[in-house]
Image (tube, rainbow, N blue to C red):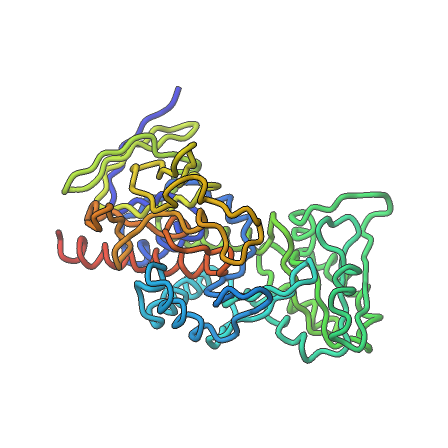
Length: 428
């Protein structure tokens, strides 16, 4: 039998991905009584890197170094893009807020100085990212390093030091490989298990002992991003101190330990700020009028009736369930909001998967005003206190632009600020 409860709050965040977490962080900081409904485990599949704008214009093989240059051009050429609704200063402020919030939870990100960093990935390729965890920061020394060591672990899938060395060896005088075998017999290592092992001082000393023979001929070492689940930067710093080698983590394919660290940091700080989580809850029904909203959220154990003044819709795209593709059209699944999309299904995808212009379906989503309130086809606001944030927004091919975290941070931050200023502060 499912229990029932009633909740009254200031704002409900629908979705617990990066955009939802950012919205809950800002709302709780402003003192709003906040309820979050959704599944935060999807953050475990995030890289932990924060992308603002990695590629623009969309020319194959290019990486945008100075973000402001690309933003100005994007805003000029794509007036419908979410970044066109804000100044560059406002975009950067939203990121500053997120990084400060995470810092209070013990997760540190390196300053960007307005530039992207080329991050070495486990595939041996380089990915542009605007803000990176402190544990990854020293990857920016790669262009200066002459003698590189890449360490991996036998049985750890998705990370092969030999393959990576072959991809980047022409950048260095030497690229050495250290493969550590933790178990005598064949044994598959999960990233989670390995990261937990790194939190043991004895295990850290054991690993350092394996690295020390390379100390005299190595000026930089890359290792898989498994250097602890908690206090990862402190653990990596200890390893550097013992070995005398500068070290950086290399992000791996999901599930991701940096993503897990991000999830844990958000949840830790939001719990301190008294955000109420409705884990795995789905919105089964909703109604609204000028005074606010009534939602019915259901999970395996509880049915919750929520009365709220405001809503941030951060339910994601197709994978997150915020959008659903029917045979002839794309629909928004909770409020049945109008979805900007190609005129017919034949236009959703190009025949060539690697088409330079991308696929039109990637621009589908919710259109909004300048503070991210959804609008109808006449460009009229649907409700003064209903907002949308994150990847559900239209005109943002975030995978190709590498802009997912930036759009999520900006839209969540702006939406909560507007709701607070115009509905809470004014008493409206």
